[in-house]
Amino acid sequence: MSVYFSQKFSTLVPYVPGEQPRDRKYIKLNTNESPYPPSAKVVEAVSGEAKNLMLYSDPECLELRRSMAKLYGVFENQIVMTNGSDEVLNFAFMAFADEERPLAFPDITYGFYPVFAKLNRIPYTEIPLSEDFSVNVDDYIGINKTIVIANPNAPTGKYLPLSDIERIVSSNPESVVIIDEAYIDFGAESAVALIGKYKNLLVTGTFSKSRSMAGARLGFGFADESLIADLNTIRFSTNPYNVNKLTSAAGVAALSDQSYYDENCKKICDTRKKTADALIKAGFEVIDSKTNFLFARSADIGGEELYAELKKRGILIRHFNKDRIKEYNRITIGTPEQMEVFMNAVYEIRKEKGL
Ligand SMILES: *Cc1c(COP(=O)(O)O)cnc(C)c1O
Image (tube, rainbow, N blue to C red; front, side):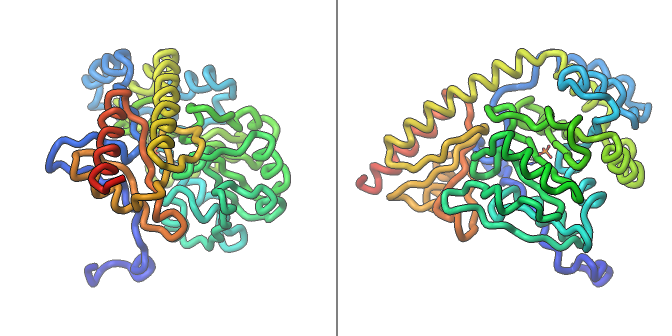
């Protein structure tokens, strides 16, 4: 830390992204990226747009919002587009939480929530998940805090049915409820259907996972137009050109080829089932997942150990050094071929341990 670093950030502990080592070629099952490339239409759109890069991007994101509105059945003024969904989450924390309306989110969830809270100096409560890692809905009823719930949750992969989400939203009319749907396309039901009904609901999503565009940074928020206007006040006060031209073109093209992504999601859900079955047979406890990853622990191999042994073999998975989940690993679902290599490595590690 330099002597010039602002006191107000001196205790900030930044978010740690999943590692992206370059020392060798790894099978990456550690950051929940899609194993499938973006649609050919996306590749074409991006190269076509490159010649226009001397111009600023459209701060209104009109074309993107038009396509989003059509696909999701909401109005254009109920949409904000952002630089990844991390950005809409940060904007939402800035806009809708403070000392009077502190944040509340589960104790085991996306690691960026506490970081954004501290960055913006917003007090927060971490509400413990139950023993089996499910969100106890009653803990969130009428608490009048700015609530953030990843649904499905990460890194557990568990989800709440829409009826539970609605109970939480309807019982907290004095504060905004943010539902982070980064993984919604892998089998859970979206709360976007509730947007017209509640003025305090913000649903966020991303092109990073199901739409194979993690490197393009494109996210979005759906909410009542009054909340979207507030988010735009923050956005235009920080970076009105937050979605660049290449990403914008990529997004529009991706939305024009939804069937390609639906197919990929189906494949990933299939591979998820097969991998879960294989892991269970190999002595793992695997949490039922509605995401593109599995959260699992072995009775015989520690979480940290499995992570390290796999890394030696060129396979990256995610391990969190956090009390309640130390013995678990989060394993992104790759292609069937990648998961076969992964399982063979697991069998080899078990054999080496005499299991
Ligand atoms: C991946 C992820 C995000 C954000 O992804 P972006 O790449 O910033 O769109 C948000 N929430 C959760 C729970 C995630 O796992």
